[in-house]
Length: 136
Image (spheres, one colour):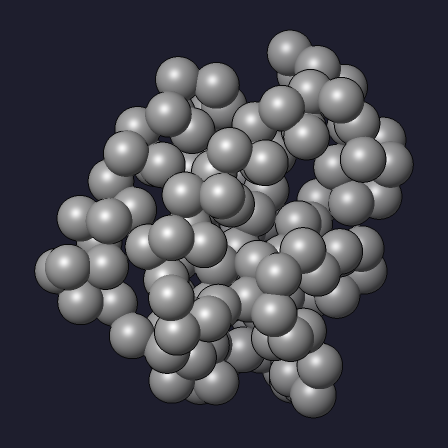
């Protein structure tokens, strides 16, 4: 793992370990997982999947997210296992990208067994492309 990525992720995960005592999964994805991370240019992409997101848990993660925002531009994605189980039709591009290159840093692999429908992926890519064409 790139030194800059490690500098941001390690303290965040230490605080997440304390805030999520029942366990969670943490997955690094994108350029940092692929090995083509460039400091100052690349985002650090992290997914946290947990059993529940209560106000107490969110408060416990507040400091970790605050420190992350000082060091990185993209905040980690935070989702419950129940939401994640039904997310493949909503986030087909993101899940496909995660499946292409990811490293499980904590817990089990939440991408294991997740299937993205080719129709959902095609529709999402079509929306993205048409939106960008409209901006041009």
